[in-house]
View 1 (cartoon, one colour):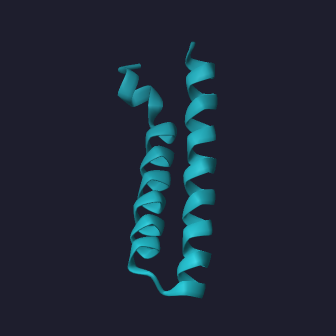
View 2: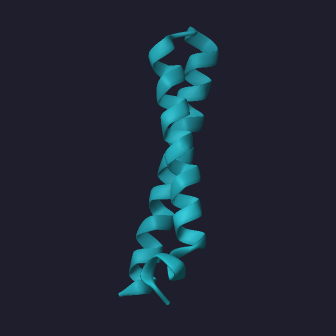
Length: 62
């Protein structure tokens, strides 16, 4: 079960990082405040999920 959870979290990290990159490029072209906020939020999600994945054993109490 834990390896599947790691796979799901890894997929979520890739998605969040990719979406943050896409939103950052869109902000660069349009200068919209919403796309900048999306880029920042999804970048924070990617960083947070990366931290969670790295320290998963500690979160699980192992």
